[in-house]
Amino acid sequence: MEKVEPALVPQRKLSNGMVIPGIGMGTFGNDRFSAEQTADAVYGAIQAGYRLFDCAAAYGNEKDIGKVFEKAFANGIVQRQDLTIMTKVWNDMHGKGDVLVACATSLRDLRLDYLDIYMVHWPFPNYHAPGAHLEGRNPDAVPFSVDEYMRTWRQMERLVDMGLVKSIGMSNMTITKLEQVLPLCRIKPTVLEVEINPTFQQPKLFEYCKAHDILPIAFSPMGSPCRPERDTEEGDVVTFEMPELRKIAKAHNCHPALICMKWAVQRGHVPIPFSIYENEYVGNLRTVTEDILTEEEMETLRKADRNARLIKGKVFLWESAKDWRDIWDGEDEENN
Image 1 (cartoon, helix red, strand yellow):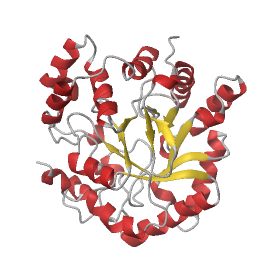
Image 2 (spheres, rainbow, N blue to C red):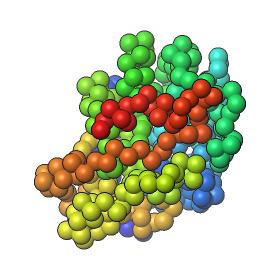
Image 3 (tube, one colour):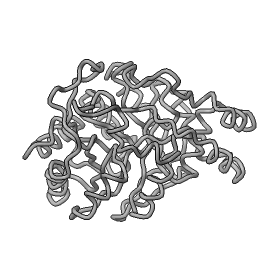
Image 4 (cartoon, helix red, strand yellow):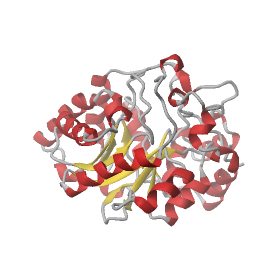
């Protein structure tokens, strides 16, 4: 297996002083791959040089991933402090005391004594079963509530106080929601995980995070060509077909996916691509250590933004919602 020296990977410093890799590996693949396949890829990625992993209780594979973390430590491939391990509390565990239980469960399943970063997966308790289609929506789904969210966040803060979590973060938030909750936080989020890719760059949210010392972490950094069917719509943009992206990829003699990785790391957010295939996950890591994009290429990609959200979250809609744009507070339209 080809290995990438971790010291060559750009690093990012969080507001609390933690330093994390500038690229990681995602683990959301339960709609296409088994937990064992994903875990095997995580083990291979550790061997290849990855040091940041993004997990979630909802992905249904933490037990298998925990086994390979333990194996990597036992075999001396890495020590625990070499890895930055992130995971997330799922929507059905927002109740009083539930966050603590959820964290304890993830720690047990991942076979860890602490988490580096723990995030609130979605900003409401709207639950759906893994792999649910739109008809699998929770009939009790509700819109965002500051009070509900802050009750969840207070439990997140307590995890930091207890030493079980080093940093806490948010996910799938908008500026509208952040402006309501940030003034109420005793411990501020160090990261915000959201969809970012060349066709959906979220420039206003990106700049808002920079201004508030929150590091953006990007899921679907290549545009999520294999996203669940429930999030697809006729007319959706296909990131890899962007002529600007394809032209730059041709100039660098590589796949457009690798240009997405270079662009993300050079822009300053942290991409977390997922693949079970060794050539792909090794390539994703290696590419951010070499052959950087020019300033002109970065500007070309900036101007190529299509403002095209792909992960719409339709399965979380509540009864009174007009459409999926309500989840995002209409901010997609404001980016036009």
